Length: 302
Ligand SMILES: NC(=O)c1ccc[n+]([C@@H]2O[C@H](COP(=O)([O-])OP(=O)(O)OC[C@H]3O[C@@H](n4cnc5c(N)ncnc54)[C@H](OP(=O)(O)O)[C@@H]3O)[C@@H](O)[C@H]2O)c1
Image 1: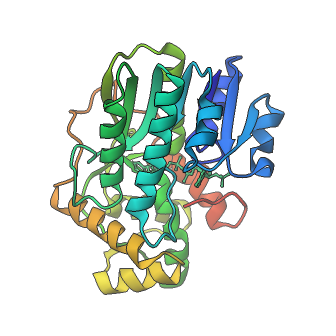
Image 2: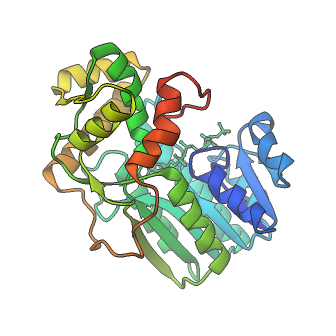
């Protein structure tokens, strides 16, 4: 039995679906039976639990062959880092209690740093905490910048007629589609060929800048030459708070953006075929961005 946390989300859904398609037994964790229903219909065993509940996770992880572990983002939190650490502690203590042997965890580029990386510092702590579990074989997937983050540009383009954000326009980032992370994680869970604590960066199809992102989006939505504007911090702060994010989360995102802009937070592995994944930004835009921009999808996630 594989156990998948965040199973209704961007990456977990793909991990669960791919394992089910390979005929594996899968237990899917989420906070709502309704949202888990589509996976249950495909043969998964739904398990309703909050990821801060160590006792519930001990039940969920019982007899697991392997676990896919992630810390879900909570954009309205007044203390995001503390919430991340609560999830980390609950997952780690349930792993210790149940003696699960293999874990694939979702981490990020920059998780090598203990601080000044915003939310990614919480993923550093997740890695460190799981690495301390005696005998655990754990593969931390240090993913690049999610292409899904750029779905936030839909509202910005509609409001301002241009793309905008805190990142430098020319900063080349390893951008990855969440589906590629899910597919890679499912493969790793099937192979279970990692021993002890390990990390693997996942860098997407190629490095790409926000200026290029705007150009690709512009072409796809019939606004050729769409520009990207690096907005001043005050403007970003106001816009994010308007979108319902807490001040604490906004501060962490701005800290992470500064860390990316300065190069403090960056990929460490040279790009190879092992850390390169298939989905191009053009494909992501055609399949995920454009339908949402045109209001044809109800499944938009941040
Ligand atoms: N965005 C980036 O560029 C980036 C880059 C690298 C790494 N990451 C990391 O990727 C992770 C997010 O992965 P993702 O996008 O796959 O996740 P996601 O889709 O945002 O969320 C996964 C699921 O977690 C569930 N969930 C939320 N709070 C929960 C709780 N308290 N207890 C139990 N379940 C809960 C939600 O499902 P229900 O509502 O159904 O419970 C949600 O669908 C984060 O740790 C983030 O730091 C992000």
